[in-house]
Each structure stands twice: as C-alpha cells, then as structure tokens.
Length: 230
Image (cartoon, rainbow, N blue to C red):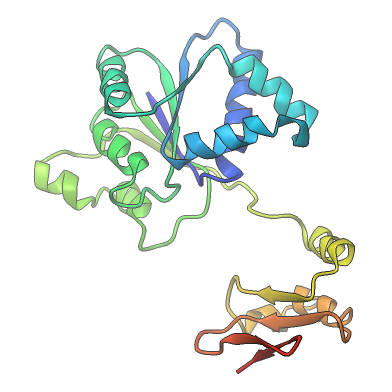
C-alpha cells in the first residue's frame, strides 16, 4: 500500500491526475485509489465544477473513476486497513501533506510505517519541524513509544508549488486588484533578489493599486479607500 500525503487543494488533484495517467499507461496493474481527509471533500468540489477544469484533467479523472474509492467514515477506513492486511495493492491520497499529527494522513502513516511492503511518497514542501521529517528520520514519538521501527519505503518528490514569476505578474496585470500583499518567504530576501516580484509589481503601482510586503507585527489596515501598513 502506498500513501501519498498531499495538500488538499491543488496538489491532491495533481497527484490524482498522475496516478490516473499511470493507471492508463499500465492497464494490467490493478489497484484501487483511496481519497480521504479534506482531500476527498476538495476533490468533490473539483468534480462539481468540472467544466472549469482542463480537458486533460477531466479525461484522466474519467479513466480513474472505476478505481476511485472516497473514504467517508471509520467503517470505510477499517475496510481499507483490512485491504492492506490482505496485501492488496492500493494508493491512498490524503491530507495533510506534512503528516500533521492527528490528521488522517498521519494516522495512515502510523499504520503503514512498520511494513517494508508499504511506501510513503511525499509530494511537496516539508517543514523541518514537521511530522513528515520525523517519519523520514525514524523519530516519530508514537512509533518509538510502541516499539515500531519505520521500515516502509519513503521518497520525496519536489512538485512546483506555484506559477512562474512572469505568470504571477501577468495574473496581477489581468486582475488589477486594489492591493497585492506578498506573504511567503523571508521579507528581506523578497526584495534583494534581482528582478524580484516585489520590484516588478512596484513598477505597476498606481493610485488604484498598492503593493506590500507582509511582515510580522506590521499589520496592513484598510481606511478611507486606501491600505496602510504600520
């Protein structure tokens, strides 16, 4: 059994598309695909607005439908556990992406970690203090306390998390918001890198469009039609 912890919005659906592509390219391999946690709910929203999605994604989703099993409650999870015990192949896509303690992906990881036939494939950024890194290092308190060694295969894949800088600038140009607040990453580095996003957006700034760097303890407030950073 393979567990793919994934962020619920966007990343899980990207992973689902890749799994569907693999299933289409390897029709002789029979396995089920399980969705759980917030991943299941968000994917259902994607499906409700299928006309807004790319044709490629819709085609892949149709290909995987007959394998796809949404996990909705404890009964479903107990059934899934029995499937794993019987050694039946399957893929679980569940949030959280960093195996946050208490999340469903964390619970699955605890169950799968001790068997070398299982695998955990990480699909995104992992903070150094995250439970996912603990799994990679074999230092998960819940497993150590239970005397269980992490023996499953673990691999990291580095998916891109956002559009290229040029596309972000074009998006702002097309949407023309009243304000853009950059909140990801170190504030100093966001302004020091050559041709950084902040500088490019600042060149577009006008009376109707403002650009800010989000910083701790410097709230941005809206007053009398303008944004102000303290």
